[in-house]
Amino acid sequence: MTFPRSFIALILFCICAGIVSANDTHPFVEGELLVKFGKNSADKAAKVSRLKAGPSLLEELKGTEWQRIRLPKGMSMEEAIRLYEKDPSVEAVQPNFYYRLLATPNDPQYSSSGLYGLQNISAPAAWDLSTGSPDVVVAVIDTGIRLTHEDLAANIWTNSGEIPGNGIDDDGNGFIDDVYGWDFRYDDNDPSDQHGHGTHVAGTIGAVGNNGLGVVGVNWNVRLMAIKIYSPSGTDTTSAMLINAYNYVRMMKERGVNIRVTNNSYGGCGEACGYDHATREAIDALGEAGILNVFAAGNNNRNTDSVPFYPGSYDLPGILNVANSNSLDQRNSTSNYGVVSVDLAAPGTGILSTTNGSDSSYGGSSGTSMAAPHVAGAAALLAAHRPDLSASSLKATLMNSVDVLPAWNGLVKTGGRLNVAAALSSPTVCTAEVEAESLFIGTKGGVFSIDASMPQNCDYSVRGEYFWIQPLTRSASGTQTVQFRVSLNNTIFRSGYLRIGDKQIQITQSRGGK
Image (cartoon, rainbow, N blue to C red; front, side):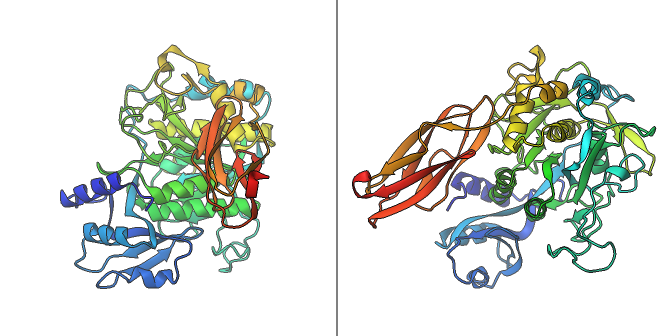
């Protein structure tokens, strides 16, 4: 089992404690579980019903080994988790968690009618180098977007492989008429915003510039893919919905859509909610596909090094986690922080942007939800200026170019606030240097190490391309010694690869280690 036993115990405690209220306090979907079967498990559908009284398969989460199941009437989640945990064919089991938006209501002391955030992050100086590109796509994973807003319509992404309204899956991706993205809350092709949060986020990333209307985003030109995961209440997305959304974005990236960044201004749940193995895997897959995933750090006024706030707190190379700064470049009193778990700060207090009240409405809002799109927008602007930069390079550049400020010392990893002009002027290229590009190992195997070096804040993953090469260091940053295990070899000769960032090290295992 890969699911942490301590977290299962926490889940079961909360179930027994009787957390059974509505979505705003209940941390997971009642009567449902997510189960991951091993890749070699035969007839997964039959395994669902292995438990007594017959659970039913609700869906297989595309592109993963996870399934969403409904428990039979009368079976408690506690009982089901314990039974699945004992099944050797099951790798992991967990609840189907709820996720909630991070925007906080406008507070009079923080409200502003201006766009001070763009000045603070030096966007005007960056625009001397680039105002963005329609070739760069940002997936806005949120409540949807008001697609017809006067300041957004020209920058909304459209799927060139679909003919609108013909009821046919023209591009053969499994989604009919996904012209602007997809609604994973209602599973339909209309990702229009019925809440307002996503439209506000989208405006900060890419409200059209130099059009004589309303506001301007960090990008004057960009394409915004609408990925809807919430109903109008903004409280009811689940692990399964998120995974399906992430997998759609990854699929479209792999099919050739130039998605460089996702914006994720949501997270957390009820008191017991925390580590979500299934969702973490899907985010990791996005990073592996070459997408930088910008997350809001949360509005709980807590140190997430001690009490994590997921998904932003996952220690993944593809995540950039963002705190909320005010107009004076100080921490908003509600913003989460953490010198290990939060990467940098960005303006998120009293931010003016597009709203969904009408095609010409604007308004202010506060929260790390508003800080994250400044960073996602900056990443997209950098990708337009330097299309050659990898997701790792985008992340490292944004981190290495912050304005280091006393107010953020000891609160975020970089000790500073976003500076997009500095990022465009001084990019960091994340290319790994390794001490050897091939290793010869004897048939007995064992634990080995190899020194790897990258520039500061270049975060990278370590992967074994074959089952017998097992990384013990799964993620690394900058210069680090990477450890891995090679299993006993029952044959005379075999060869495989260990991947460290962008480098492949050939591992040859043979008798005598030659």
